[in-house]
Image (tube, rainbow, N blue to C red):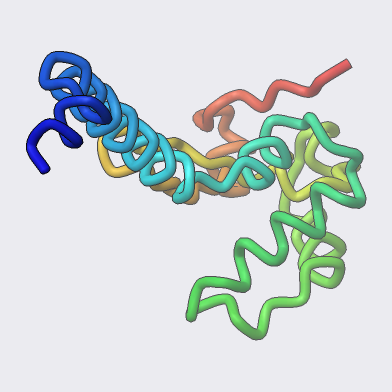
Length: 133
């Protein structure tokens, strides 16, 4: 029986193969673990990489995932809130990302939702909105 095992699984080859297989499985597990939690569509929507209608839909669903905003109506919200801003970029805004943005917390792989509030924008104290051309 030992001769058969030596023939099929030589010690030096078997030891290296097991080590490489374990390392490969560990790397694959970590890769799946870290990429499975990211929400790439949300990041693309807030960065302006998607069409405005599609981006608004994704951002609206993202906001509705919060228990506070579960009854939120995005199109109605955009039409109501535009009147609170004095600056033309916000007054004519049709995208959610004009007033809202996210900051990524790399340590915990989560997004923090942020809003450019009308009072801050009108006093020019908010984070700048960069529109993609």
